[in-house]
Image (cartoon, rainbow, N blue to C red; front, side, top):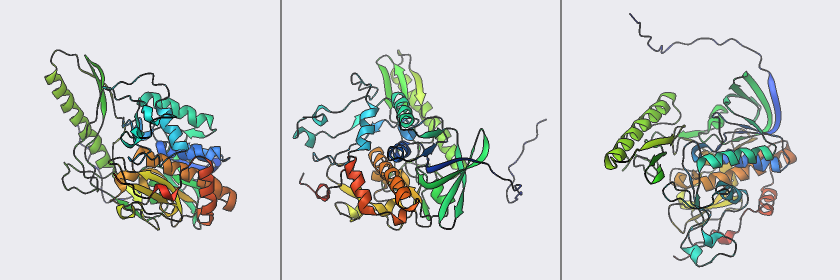
Length: 421
């Protein structure tokens, strides 16, 4: 007869004190290997830093590759103006670099002709600068990009604690197959997507419990490979209004597991429906998301939070621009203040967990803005190490703006001004 072991709650144990080896010393450590983390690591390395990139999975790209969210959303404003350039544009082009022809069913679609050099400027007002890529190809390309930049990559590695000295992070405590150890750093970029480093370091954060079931997958049938963009309805303002439950938090282990299992049931039902509608086809699933596909989980509450009310507004500390992937017209300037830790002077934040509120989180969580903020924080961390031993609060923002523009960043206040439809 088996005995069921119930979880123990309300008790504690003492973990023995132990000395941790310092297994690496770096100018910049980037936590999280999604698009934001890749951009941050590459930007810091290209600006002369020793960089370590930590990723808990065994692949780069995050939701873009492991989650099959294969839409490189627009670098333009939907009115014909490109508002993001530099490394993010390089990353967009890299995603379809080996694509020989479009495949509409599989959603592999290259750069629109009008956005190629010398393309039709009028057509750019009607066709947005975006692509759809093969996630497996992009995964391989991102690994090579990071390696060629000289970044030290550690897979299967999770940050589990931070060591602070005064108002700085001096070490990240990590755990992997080698055990538990510490990495010394002069600057840190939190690109975890869930503000994990911010939370561990005592920054103020905001968590949401409004995520819905979601998980894109590929299947084969008679017409070839097909991408299924599978998701329950969600609210772009991060509420439950009009959304389809159940709802989940992204910072709770049980709810993360429930989200994954619930999504797998959703996949099974979708497959059953496809097979019922195509009884003569041998419908086979070939690849499904291998990470939890959360849209919005936990974010930094910085000294300033970007919101929808700041649309078309300019900031003196603007370090990048982004359009709105959902509709043409809106442009947001990203202030430097949204990317800086408050309690930790050498902590920067990139990707979907930057300091933006729920009115604009749907914009700032998307791939283009993640690539942009990753590029900014990687570049800024390098500059901060050079100027102030990693203290981002002492960074001369004008120097950062100049460096970003010299490397292809678009920081023209005129691009923020609204245009007529």
